[in-house]
Image (cartoon, rainbow, N blue to C red; front, side):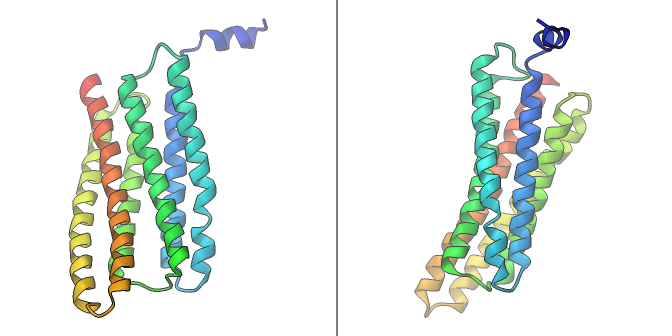
Length: 215
């Protein structure tokens, strides 16, 4: 056995989880940025942009699977095994739902929609950026105040999206009473966009739980 192999053998195995989670949040933020770019695009090029999330969705699935594999391999973990499982699942769900909404927009051939959609997507994107910051700060456990601040901002964005969702639904019903098909389709899209916000909060709740346990 070479020296590198010996040193690798004695390295703390729990550190692998931080790297995997950081890669997860990188993929999550990249997916969100592509989605936001697609929403801002006003031409048919929107569909080409939104389709780019699929590759990142596959990457997030692979990283989630790797996290579960490492849970089975490692006796020592950086925080509770249940928290690791829940956090991986929540982060993966965020990417899944973003990709799913993009797929539905391509399916329905949406080229325009009310401004609430863009506002919700922007809020979700901001929330995702905060989750990524929190995850990177969590590695050293030396500045948990920044982790908590990021999580608080995630909760703020979730509340913001709730208000935007309710306003969007009210306007949708008022302006499209005679077009039930449009109402059904838009309601479906708005609900999934709001669900992305909920999943961000779920991930934030797990991170806050970790902070409480280890502070």
